[in-house]
Length: 264
Image (cartoon, rainbow, N blue to C red; front, side, top):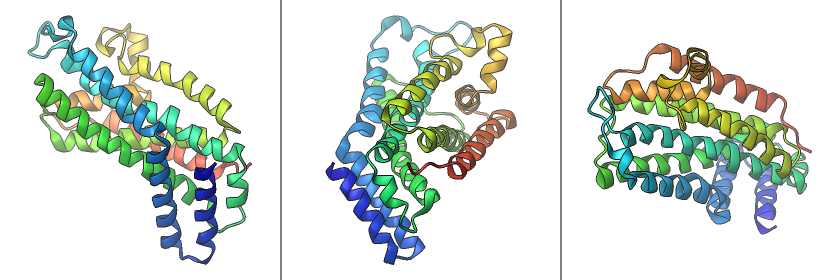
């Protein structure tokens, strides 16, 4: 409850603050609460990092893939980076604001000039910061611990990751904007998480899927993200199709989240 009171107090303080100051106060408050509540660091950094280390210790995944110099574990690293974004977007982000709505905090914030765009932006920035930390740790542990090379096209990878983060977090914002409470937010996030991870190639690589499923995968946010990541790892700038797909998800979901945001 102290976290909820902090958010409500921060929102109330924006009544006398300018637009930039109001947004900055909310960002600081939400970033502090994310760390204090431990949900986002645990699920967004801790769990995927442990999974990376466990998979890195599986001998079969250290075998080279047929027809290339990569190992199966090398192929799993970009999938796990997407896994990190997906778990933040479908687990941590929606339950936080849905909890605020369920406990009446958003009802109080509605009386201030905060507005839905700033409320969602504060959550977006807080979880984006956690995603950046997780991505850097992933690449460092995979490189120093298991000898996985960095993407050969670093700029392409960075742009692809930014678009993938924007697309996934925008989906999380959309769930956040519409779910009436923690229970529905968790249910919606869970229902979305597993199909998205399937189409990212977590269980079956996209290249080994039947043509119909592979085509569907390329039009999903994680499937498009995986395609862009693979291009960057092979040394090419990501092709336009996956980048435009990610940009479309980010734009449409963010717009709908702000437009149909529910205060209570």
